[in-house]
Amino acid sequence: MSKPFAGIKVLDFTRVLAGPYSSYQLALLGADVIKVESLEGDDMRFGSRANDWEKRGLAAPWVAVNAGKRSITLDLKKPKAIEIIKRLAATSDVVVENFRPGVMDKLGIGYETLKAINPKLIYCAVSGFGQVGPDAKTAAFDGVIQAMSGLMSITGFENNGPTRVGFAGADVMSGATAALGIASALFQRTHTGKGQLVDVAMIDAVMGYLAQQFTEHLMTGRVHGQAANLSVTRKPTGNLFKTKDGWIVLAVMTDPQFQRLMKVLGREEALADPRFVDWPTRIQNNTALHEIVEAAMKTETSATWGERFAKNDIPAGRVLSIPETAQLDLFKHRTVLQTVETEHGPIKVVGSGFRLEHGGGSVERPPAKLGQHTDEVLKEAGYSPAEIESIRADKVA
Image (cartoon, rainbow, N blue to C red; front, side, top):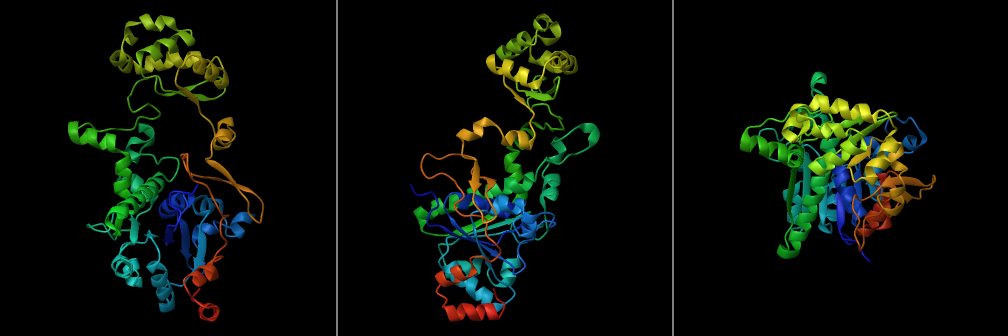
């Protein structure tokens, strides 16, 4: 069974995370993604050269969003390289880039130029603030967007100040948004026969994920603040609780769940306490209720409570580390963790976050060495061996 994007060719000029994450999603689903790198390679390839993988130019953070792609090297400051890009674009379906707006135009391979060569081309540009507007040419990075989007203002504890989420959230949200935008444009092309510009502003993308918080503010004036580990519902039993040997997050949001929780904890008397008769009173007496629940939970281990809660249909999850999560048995029945064979031995990578019944996401080739596929791609574009040799001699590739 072929994958959804089988036969789709993508020219990928992206670096770091937001852009590469988007094209990686397409590669997982069958697209032929050709990563265009400088002769020195993407900085992310090498990290700080602290281990063998980084010294090989296969740093784990780079592999995480570039496995399955082909790699070519070109010096885009040279006219011959631009000529090569134009020839490749003529037969490509998608171009993805995350330079500051205007950079690709200065190189001579911006949207209007490539559109004239290939009217069916989908051109996705990922930037901090979009291709138009007063901040269009302002550089942006994950931390900048987390700060400006409001995300940090609702994350963490009030006494610690605004807090970044524990991963490059703005980059990943923007990458996922870009992948959806590209997929939408490709589908629309099946109706119109036309390509188009997909303009992804990172700040727009993060706002899209904060739709509830922004809409509630714009409709009612409510301003969401930092809630620590409390659920967005502000219900006291949607929070983090300490156990005998760790932590558990409860997601008890309904009255039946609350009643079952109190019984399993051995705190049935709380059900008759006037401070906890309904959600408004429970929220009003949040601190007292939290102390009652946590005092009970501290008497047993996280594993014990996990079993009891599962048996009684009480939504709860043990707080696990990345290594602990990776070892969960449930992944034996899923496809998100995948083993990829490399010349240096097998590695595990994260694939698509969903399964398709037909032609789902998978990594079909190991992470590429820098420029590994340059000659191959040039040959496919119609360059002769002599021309390729000349390109090499002139240090264009």
